Image 1 (cartoon, helix red, strand yellow):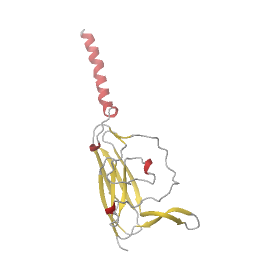
Image 2: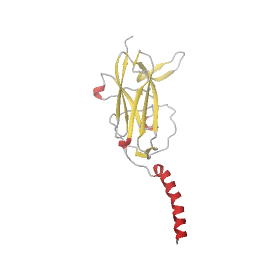
Image 3: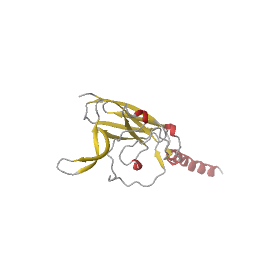
Image 4: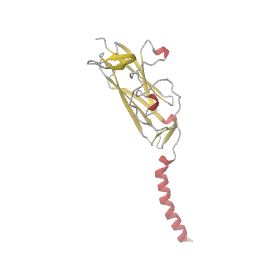
Length: 192
């Protein structure tokens, strides 16, 4: 009997250790409040024509895996980190607003309009998973905003969309995620 107990205890300890190691990854939680969203600008004051890099990051504050379903609980709509909103890699995005359009909550287009993007192949997923204390981030470079139309290229050719360089003024950049978290950053374009 004592020998059986020693064997059972001897086998149980390694099994408990293995479960303790894999549990944070194998048995995820579903807690949107454990996410921390942040956004930063490489410069907050620039001259017209200069490029601004916006970096958005999201961190799982849990020491366990946090798996969240893809939902549409955005506080601000039309946010993305690229031209193909429906194929986004992360559940966050940005949008830009001017003093004229912020009250209508209509974001300016930060990517050229078009349908001919070579978008990556993304398999259908229904959730987003962050490992224990994992952080993900993505960046985008902005120089202005886009409107519908055609731009004639020097030397020939045409591209979709017309880029309008940011003009002097104050802009609001909204970074949000699908769980409803929102971060605002402000950008000042100096008069030439």
